Length: 358
Image 1 (cartoon, rainbow, N blue to C red):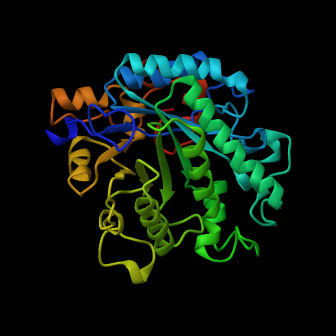
Image 2 (cartoon, rainbow, N blue to C red):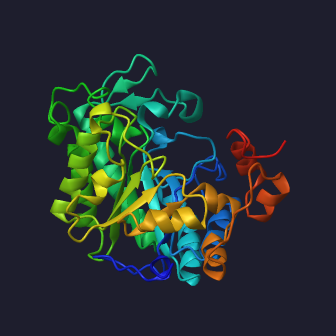
Image 3 (cartoon, rainbow, N blue to C red):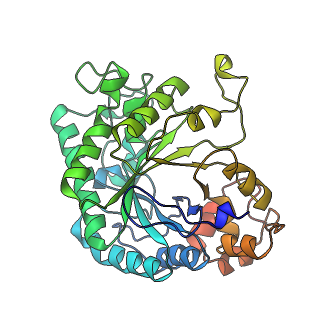
């Protein structure tokens, strides 16, 4: 139990007061132009007050065309800085590290949401997405970097690049989706080039102690485990990021690929030579026992999603009682409202099977 509540230092930026990070959760609560709403401010700052050592925003889109959901937080224009500054300031007041997650939906940013045809590394018949031109890829890299600089101006301690869950960066990584024949397609080095170009840009444009993390999917979404491990190892080798966030869906599961089975999926990443990079995991960490077991697997921190929705103060509750058991699903709408979820967020959670009592 002690390690969960011990500080964690990073190569750059402030230390976390404990090993609990708030997962970057889609919540549909911001204004339609991407400006931070009072509802999203309340949801996030309640988690900072609740004891999370690091509070991360939902995925904030770096281009208007990159929006994947209604009511998604934006960081593609200077009009977003005022709200983001208010948020970062409030998170800091609760002694929580502030991180803004940067994202582009790619082929998963539908025209119904953005008003634009979606884009992708290659033409995609299933979604109707068109391939990005080389000029557009360079603009995309510049826009990720510009978004990181906005986050810095707003007072965030750092950013996380969302390279998971089948969104645009992950689409580039996938040999199933990316069929390009230029320097951004073909080999894994080429398919992942966009990520490393963005990282170089952020390091060039943002202050020296600005924190930088990357979220990766280990499998699914067109990703092969060997490719995920290789990208993760290169990120650690180059030393330009501070933390690696592995989204496993279930931190205790076996790999999907048959030839990789025989040991836990997580072990493929704990065995990486991480050097100065901190490793964290997300995926079905639901109670105190699982939080403890997850940390003991060899990672540096754990990330909570559903558990943080159910209890804004999960870390404080667990620290007060090591046998703390969270509310059982399904929970009432009243419970979620008391935990800081707006009606829009509660409606979204009602689409998760068995989460909200009807």
